Image (cartoon, rainbow, N blue to C red):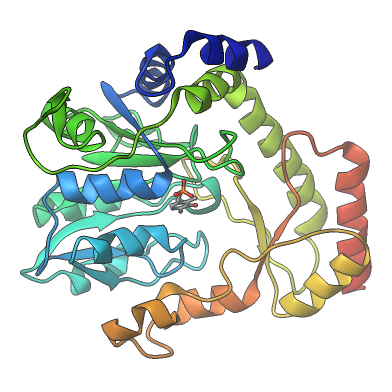
Length: 353
Ligand SMILES: *Cc1c(COP(=O)(O)O)cnc(C)c1O
């Protein structure tokens, strides 16, 4: 990584160079799509996807309220209306059985989020999208390398929607040393549009076909990601091993629910998230024991002041609200030592005793 960083600095090429091109090819191959377009962040990947699909004022886009702000923020920033649909309490992902009743004449797209590293039920979502002629944009920010068995098609995260988005925020399974993101697609026209759009609507320097944005994945971040990419599969595997250890030791505890892996899913455990009615108490106890935990996410988006104008009330999405009160993510990353895994497990056992 040091070598790659110095090589980039010495090359003098910091924006739109060969590192990015190599990275885009590697990600496209990893995800199993034809095109990958690097941008400045996962948020920008989502925003440009909305723009490239022509989402605008008067349109509605369906997503989950139990996600990071970006997913719904980009819909609103295009002038469109985010329409929330509650989650499945087993997976914390959008519940496909509730999507159709949220569709109106104005609905243009669905953004499923693969929360914590497990894919949303894409077979059902793609079927609904086809029936209603809606676009699908996967928010795969937390799910690089995860997959799902789907009838005819290969089911890797980031290969199933019209456009699909990854984040390389430092904490993600594949993390840069700063901000970075990418859009993946099999659609050549959309890929070309995104390539212009990320660079001021320009194909040729100082000539502009339309008004675009300034959001590129820079050469230093690309160099860092290129050095990390050969390890992503083994890192994900390590995450899964630690999750299996936690599952085995925590699943018998009354009052606590371990992550539920639905059939045909390859979960990459961006987060290992358990749920308990005693969440806040548990979090305080673990902190005292020197074990850091986080809640993703303590307040669902429909209750945030930023989305107050949408007019949603408390209890609009009971499963998302319950999850916000009950979930807590335990330490899990590829380098987490065996003795630290045992420490986490013992602390949780003693809390519930
Ligand atoms: C991290 C994340 C994003 C945003 O990615 P950034 O690179 O931080 O802009 C979007 N959606 C989800 C679900 C995320 O976890």
